Image (tube, rainbow, N blue to C red; front, side):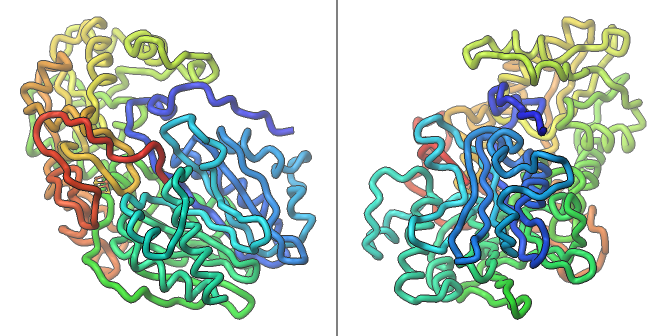
Length: 507
Ligand code: SF4
């Protein structure tokens, strides 16, 4: 029996440090004769870092009817109905012998209608199953254009599902429906869907979020996953990343690739590399962990300071710290240890952040006392957790704390799948020096946009491959407010404003 993991910590502390909420993860299969439901649960488990609020998996009966389960919470909890009771056996849903599965893990920002927002979406009487990763901030005009009445959507994906369902009903062909609707969507939207006969996967025209295709050994079928770590978890071999604007249809006749009737400059989300994706994943030719190490090396060149020890914010700053130490020659050590027991301990949302931090992180005084410390992390968004950690380090005896961040200044809200409030973005109204004073650090420095681009590009596994990402092919929306796709307006810049980036949920 699989033990259900309780959903205990607030989302921003689930992964060990302050992070803006992740987006979502998609995982699906077309693999005749394989236990696709059980394998999809395995894949979603591996993508758990992309969303901890809910999950779902659907397969098909012999009659082509979608069946499955979805619920709030972590995969082991939300999908327990789909998990084999005996390890190694098939999921109850595999008794249907379906070759197709569609799975999803979700992040959401509010408890309102949470179960309504959990994906995949299905509609009674329809064979369609749809899940997505990303965010579509401006769907109202499309809903008007196609006469879709959904005044209280659980999420943008529910609206997208209704638009696709409507198009599917008009055309009787889901590939046609995708070609009609997807080029009209503004924002991040990687889709995973099935009409009961085929599995469909697509990547939005900007390529904001990753999605890749893998193949099982001995012609066992195909796997679609947000990240390569998902492929590897079920023994699939990486075939390729989907290209921006690509739609892949996988069915009885194999795979078919077509492209949307819209072209945009590629603008991949840099935060996929900087912290959202698993360090072991490769995206568009670059390894995530090595991109973080390279970013740390570049920070050591642009923001070098005399110090005695480099430490990482656990676990998020590990790659940046390693790179900073390698380049600077300052020894890397472990100054903070995560109290793993915290994940299994009830901590109410109302508990003071400082108390949570003290409970969750244990400083190693022997490493810190009297030392000038470089504290590396992947990003700084609100600064609240960082402030508490800096206090912790100083209380442990650190004489100086220099904070080095492996992402550019996050000054503007994201509308493409990374939920952030403008009013909470400390970099939107403070200089580096002001942030340092605010969090009690001796100094603060962020990697520049260009250095961040180069660090990712230099992490290429196959340098020179024309499919690799290039400098300038990354979104800069949160750094400079220049968004590649349409966003809700007007957006106020400068001092904190009250405009929320999203209406409660992403995916
Ligand atoms: S605005 Fe920032 S977080 Fe959002 S997609 Fe662009 S790079 Fe990623």
